[in-house]
Amino acid sequence: MATASPLPKPMSQLSRAVSEWVDSVRELTQPDDVRWCEGTKAERDGLTAELVRSGELLRLDAKEFPDCHLYRSDPADVARVEHLTYICTRSKEDAGPNNNWMDPQAARAKMRELFRGSMRGRTLYVIPYCMGPVDSPLARCGVEITDSAYVAINMLIMTRAGRPALERIAREGTFVRGLHSTGELDPNRRFIMHFPEELAIESFGSGYGGNALLGKKCHALRIASWQARSEGWLAEHMLIVGLRSPRGETHYIAAAFPSACGKTNLAMLIPPESMPGWEVCTVGDDIAWLHPGPDGRLWAINPEAGYFGVVPGTNPETNRNAYNMIRRETLFTNVALTADNRPWWEGLSGGTPVTDWQGRPYDPANGPAAHPNSRFTVSARRNPSCSPLVDDPRGVPISAIVFGGRRREVAPLVYEARDWAHGVLVGASVASETTAAAVGQVGVVRRDPMAMQPFCGYNFADYWRHWLAVGAKLSRPPRIFHVNWFRRDSHNKFLWPGYGENLRVLAWMLERCSGRAAALDGGIGLLPRPEDLNTRGMTLEPQTLRALLAVDVPLWRKEIAETRAYLEQYGERLPAQMIEQLDKTAGALGR
Ligand code: GTP
Ligand code: SPV
Ligand code: MN
Image (cartoon, rainbow, N blue to C red):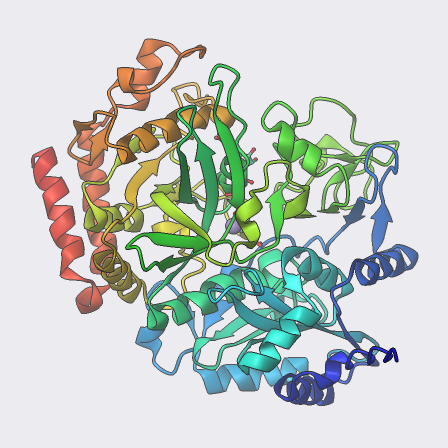
């Protein structure tokens, strides 16, 4: 006799801890309705259709951009707000000079008042999610509560969200609690608070990106970096890319560049035609969780399931795959429109913008047509070079770690650290020109250690100590490199073509990893000689390549003095090894 399969349990009954939390938030915020997200495609399509009906989403030209939509954010809510982002630990020193700090009790009280009644007239969405493959021991779960359907749709694309995540939470009993409300979008009533000791996030008054999609920077970096320290791993602002050389060797590289400095592009790199036989696969484009493995290597998973990428500059010439990826099933935020309802942004060669990102008739006097921090949200599966290993619960083994910044001078195209401890100093010394990814001035050089300045959930001094400790545990540590794709000449032109051509630099790194390539000691670290880089098929003047690989000693002495002054701010908590490594470099450059 056939037995009818039982109806699945309602989501609200799967985890008592989650339900009780939802009830308490409901009481505080007073929503009209509560909806638990199952994580199905039908659910996401339904939410999207609702937002199209309400006018919050605009359907784009179905012929050229099928299943693509445009969302326009509030014009004063277009990027991360670092000055309103806080780490709330019992001890202020645990947050460190690198973070804004608030006493946890004071912060909770302040946020309680903001959240009180904030969801009246709105729907509360409950989004259980898993950062990483749901069956991976390296993955971690969270639940975001939000009153924004736009945020819910983004989370459904960016994470493994829904019933399987909630089932894992019910089994494990722990999860990160992320509470979000858009409030009135008043910049004076906007705060992004983190309580790492309680695994909790409270975000109010913004609906944008890293401020509101709490699985991303808030959970997978700020809270996870705190968890990672106590559990012996690393949560980093890194892409993960796999490279198969013509010899048939596959290596994985993890690279940390500050926001809007080229992670997505490097993760999706297309080999130049003059480098036949190379294959590239993307594991992740923004965040990596790195664990020492039983084999003495470092293993990485990408905790995310989608890309929240910078739109301007994406085109068939810079990256054909990225351009094709966002021509279907993509949610655009703050791009411009052409007369035939196609999305438009700076850097596209065809099309003419008629409506700017704010929905006004386009007028160049108002600035760029698309916001410089306009973004696409798209499933990683849409990436033609997506690695089949994205769902592997073990992750991938990392051969090289790369740090980089956007520097018009000083930093050469590439150099290699002497060893792991020196590599930690190289990472800690990263400085980069600011970009539109965060509110504030663009183009000024600031310190951004490991590209984590906005994202490290605890004191950088403790973080570098932790990096040193993780390295000491690895019998086969990755080699560590530094790159700079953004060096410029006296006419302000980029010296290096970048994008796909960056493979030439990665290829040298892999030759170093295999012990086949030579390097010169340049004082700051090990550099390729011009002839060590494969430049076949490139039009690059020999003097340009020499300039790209030059170490300007007086400029570097100044850089080292600045790094020293920066590190000294961390006082007694700074590991002595950091200054020892700096002294070694200073000594090598001569005083
Ligand atoms: P976040 O999502 O903010 O973390 O940014 P990201 O690090 O992923 O940067 P992304 O790859 O989106 O690139 C940011 C901007 O830099 C885009 O406008 C790119 O077109 C440009 N860019 C990326 N790679 C290169 C490069 O190698 N050379 C040059 N000149 N520009 C690049
Ligand atoms: C970044 O700023 O590094 C991003 C975009 O990746 S956001 O999600 O806003 O953090
Ligand atoms: Mn990023």
